[in-house]
Length: 137
Image (tube, rainbow, N blue to C red):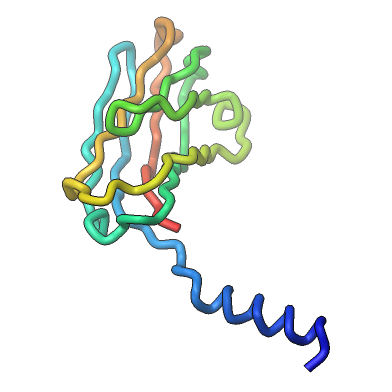
């Protein structure tokens, strides 16, 4: 077997042996306001995610009036980053992905997401995160 064929066959074997991405916990919709909001994700497989990487996905964001602030995103007490509603207010796509690190070896079977405004949001608006998903890959 020549080297390019050997490399291709090895890559194909690795691709087929790699675990598929799976949704391990879900939540939403969540309406955001002036106070932090905590959401306990319903687990569909968090107990089986050990040893894999996790990603937190916030999608289907919508808003009646742009809140004009950032919302801090935390997963089980760990800061992951920030979201805003600029794209949602302008009719664009509104999905955020965060690397959530390695799944714990002995997970508790649930995960808590906290979304906290970093300043008072604009009055009259209603910011909504439609779907929250925790993925293992």
